[in-house]
Length: 329
Image 1 (cartoon, one colour):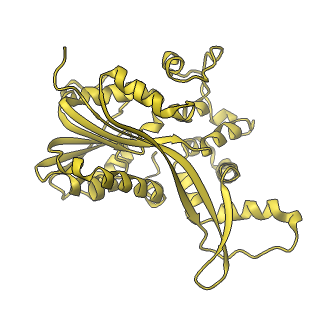
Image 2: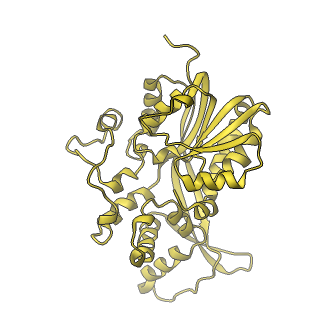
Image 3: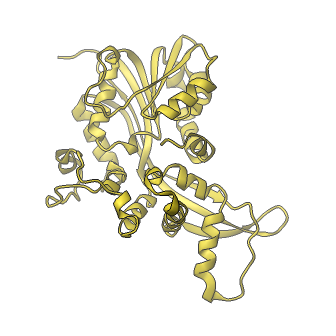
């Protein structure tokens, strides 16, 4: 994600869900000392405002992200925080810097790991980053039907060239091992497909995650899948219509104007930067409509008694709390 301001302004759901998990594990966080790492820190707001205040006063926190613009933003914004620093890190790298291995007493990650093409590599790197006995608390998306919209839009020949590449290096063996719906005839993956999270494909994402963590070597202290929802509210008053024949047109207008929904969809869309300028606005509209068509649209009344429209987004998250064994055999 490279649209820093857009992401920061459109991440209310992520912030709320991260806060829920952090408060649930508040005791565990308060006992975290030493050098801790936040993986996928983005603009650094969750790192600074939610995580750091709940760690032990003896802890220092390092925020990491694959995005240089995100790290530059976080460094500038939180320049004066002595216990907080930031640097670029690709958690999926196959060449983890030697100087980072075994350096962290605790690892945290919120709303990051679902973007990883190779979830195994990401968790294996977390294992390597931790000291013996170190713990990790992670939370990320397990399922959201909005991801299926990417594949639908990919079918449009106008946008297809910008949503695929010739080669994809996903490790097929991992999919074979951990997903029951893997097709052995699927020898390559479209680029659009790789932005559909790994666990989104799994019929039992909790079991798949637990299996992966155990096989890597973690002791699993907690592993759960949870259903969540978030309402994107419309702050503009839309004129009502008297004929059902124009419902589809009305629906299209509504989803493009629901406060927060469009901005959120655009901020987290991985293809926006590839789309030519003359197609960008149209592409945004198509994506937002396709995602919204899978959501629940409903009406309510504001404080003035006027009708507004909202979109209910339902999704699943995975939460895991794990420990690297205190000794290796």
